[in-house]
Amino acid sequence: MSETVDKLFMAATQARKNAYAPYSHFMVGAAVATESGQIFAGANVEEAAYKTICAEAAAIANMVTHIGRHRIAEVMVVGGAENDGRLVTPCGHCRQYLREHMAGEMKIHVAGPEGLRKTFTLEELLPYSFGPENLK
Image (cartoon, helix red, strand yellow):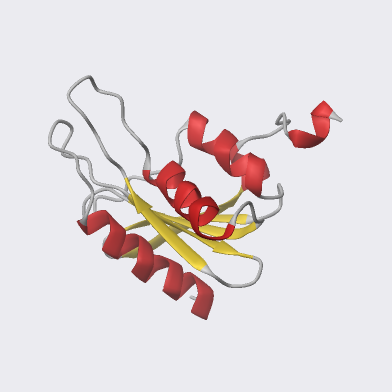
């Protein structure tokens, strides 16, 4: 893994430990790297009415809160159980959030607690997407 991917993995793994998932018990951490190399992490947060804040949305909100709207260069999502092999990719809503802040060729890494499982581009996960340029 590259140095940026390693840093993203560490940040997302740490955030995952802080996830609040008392209902689903499905803990997810995410981290985004800006084009300037800053890393922001987030964890999923549930509540009793089953309205979840996803880890990816939390990481993006953390980025925007701290430095304003910036472009995301890479993303790491860590979920699932160690060695279960299942991919925990961003949900449809989070894919659209990512689309708002990153270009289609940018990388989204998905991992389990043991490490990287697969890398996608945003375009692979959200082909023919609608974004800010469609509103111009």
